[in-house]
Image (cartoon, rainbow, N blue to C red):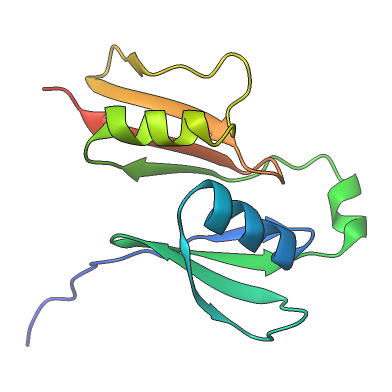
Length: 126
């Protein structure tokens, strides 16, 4: 019997409006729509860029009133300098976003999507 092998993960991010989130990820971050449960008013959709897939799930407005930390995704990236410049031109960063080397051996940058889900893109520098 072969040992189980984990080869992908599809994180699910909470969003208030799936269409608005799709617009942000497609037009600002260069993702493609992989699927959606409805063409006009989706409640669940998947986006894909290169080898990663992220799912977006609608959550009721009342859930956003709670003080809950949003997810933070760490995405392994190739050609991080080029990706940083691509996103900088698309105006998705807050004023303090920078590309920096860390004490733990990565080069990375982080920002939040339109629903305060954290996105960190990084590469190993060692």
